[in-house]
Length: 314
Image (cartoon, rainbow, N blue to C red; front, side, top):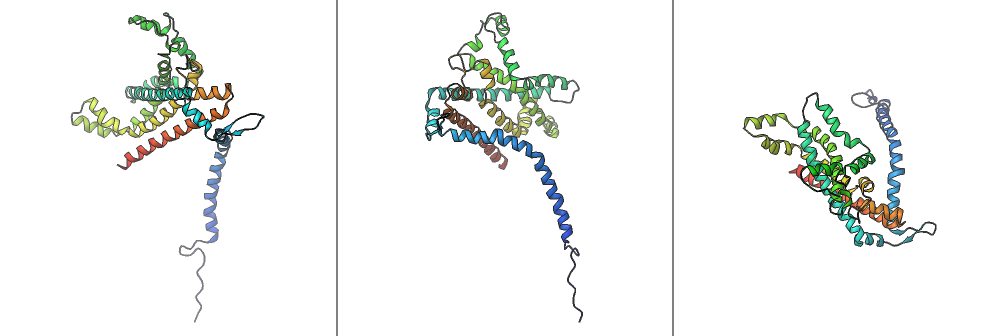
């Protein structure tokens, strides 16, 4: 009786060792190329972001004493941050700015997107002009608004107020108007960015829904309320997260326009942390303030994502 020969490799679905190695090689080569391109950015992020972040978290538990050695203080720095009147006031101003700039930039960005959404040829020029504040350097923006906010009666904005019978405002020089004036600058700069994201979201709205609403006799406001806004829910979630984080991390416009004044009426957490760390040399307390801001940003982001996931499940 003839012996049955064992099946040869590669016959009837049994891959040969050589073919297996050929399949593994392109997959390995593709992942290697991808990681090779990512490596420079990852190295830079590690050196200039993740390592300093870890060092800041470590410093927040110490009294940093250069040349004398750091001294462990545990949670005392965090206790100082959450109980000190200056920090509490700065946190409150940060929250007010975040809420005001977020709501203002989203509302104005949506209005601009609805006005400039379409396929007309001339709209690219208008969109570009409206988007310019976002790409302009903050130092230039702050200097322009400082000129507009000139507190004398012949200032640019005060002249306009005089036309309607309102007296000259001090804007940045008054404790009552300084925070609102800085908030207006943030809204003016952030609204065009939100507008572009809204325009991208509006391009994905199903036009058949508009046609069906028109056939049913829905007015423009009803189409906006029942078709446009529900379709833009994912966009709202993204913009709310980005704008809120942008508002919580506000620093440059405060530093350039008011530097926290007058009398601390515009002091926010980042400017106070900067002053405590680099001007008063209390690096441990400054690190604790930075960690508090980091935790608030993480909690806000996770909360938005949780609400978004629950709505998606429904």
